[in-house]
Each structure stands twice: as C-alpha cells, then as structure tokens.
Length: 319
Image (cartoon, rainbow, N blue to C red; front, top):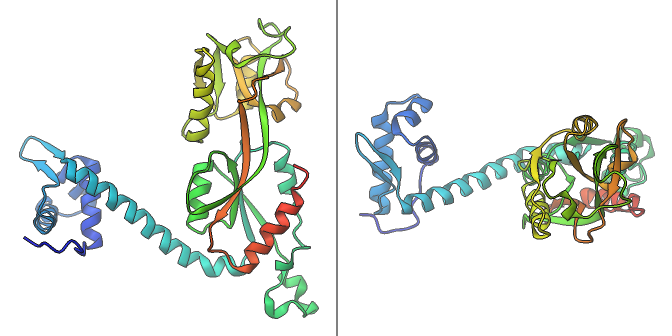
C-alpha cells in the first residue's frame, strides 16, 4: 500500500471517478467514455489501492459510494472546477486585454440600471488606450473602449467572471464567492402586483404577512438561490405561508394576475411599468429588499480593468 498522500491522480482517472459516482454504475460510466467497464474498474481499483481506502461498495447487484468516497469525490470535483477555471483564465487573458470590456448583468437587477448600461459610454476612461498609445492620438479611434453587455443569471455570471469570460458583472446579492470583489450599488424594497379586484387592491400598502395563503409568483430558485432562500425565509418569519409559484417572466406573471389568479412579488422599480388590469402595492417591511451589486475578480485585474471599473462606478454615483 502506498502511504505517500501526495498521490498524483491522472486526469482521466479523476474523470472516471466522478462519472462513476454520478452515474451510480461502472457500466454506465464506461459506456459514456466509450471503454469497457473492466478498464474503468482497473483504474478505480488502482486508485483505491494507492489510497488504502475503499471508494465504492460494489458487486453484481449493488453499487454505492462509501463515506470516504463521497468526501474524496467532492474534493476532486472542486479541484477539477478550479482546474477548468485556470484553463479558461489563461485562454481568455489575451482576448480580454485587447478586446472590448465585457460586462454582465442579471435581468433582476434594479430596472433603472439596465438602460444606463445600454447607453454606457466609457470613452472618458483612461483605459481607452493601451500604455504605448496614450499619447498617440492617431490611434485613438482604433483603441476606443467598447462595452459588450451579456445577460444571465447571477450564478452563471459569477462563474463567467471567475473563468475570465467577463471582466465584471452586475448581479443580485448575496454574492459570497471569496474570489470576488463585491461592490453594493443600490437596494430597493418590494411591491406586490395584484388584480384590481383583489382583496388587497384598496389598501395603500401591504405587509409581507398579507401574502399568507396567497398564490405568489416569484423568480425560480435556480436563478438566484441565496436571494430566493433569504426572501422566503423572511416572509415565513412573519407567519405568512404563501403558495409559491416560480415564473421566469414577470410580464407573463402579471398577465395571469390580471385575471385575478394569484399575486406577483416584484422589486419596487418594476412598478413603474404599467400593465392593464393590475395595480402595484408597496410592501412596507423594512427587512424585505433586493440589492444590486457590481462584482469582479479579486486581485487579478490589470490596470486597464481597474481604470474601467473606477469610471463605471463614477457613472453610477446617482444610484
């Protein structure tokens, strides 16, 4: 048995290991790889022998991951994720340094911010020229900084920033990734969209507890898990027990609500968009809010990116 714990595990064996754990079968994992199951089994047997621990319990009829195996697979998964990020960062670095400034945003950030981003002009940023060309005006037209916007969920945008596909992004808090620098931009309360015939329609404002028993349309949890959980936990703390329904489009949800079927929980800024048959009631709970933040990678930015981010924050001072 090998007792050196600095075991070098070949990348293909790591792939075999993860796929076997996910598939719950050597046969299915081997079929995905296009190899015979015995080949996969030999790789895993050799690894278990080197480690001195059993990663899988398996025989003809059963297959399961042991507790040591579960821990090992988790660490391997994390290591491969970081490895993939490293490859992407190296691959995109040259493109990022010479190309346009790539900025992401979530559809659920403050609605007044999106038009600002669409009209964003960073031509006054010191980063519009590379160092060698700063004093060469004849090249200025070729070196003007363009901004390319890309939309996505906060989870996807976080991964794109970590992997170097985006310079920075706007998303919804909480953003807890340690490798990111997070700058809060603006915080806004919620409102409740109800039909004109709803029992709450005549109230000037509502409380979170007024949603008790209501069918409430809200964003899908998969889009922003941390924000979704925090919001539902607070509403539950008031004693309210709504029936939650996930919906991707607030506009579609408002169309349903117009027929007096449920209510929609929305950021307050969305209320400025009128929709026939519905009205918007501000929710006055002080602890119920949604926060937009700008995030970028910690400590791995060239001077150009830092200059652009400073200029961008100056543009957003009014928020």
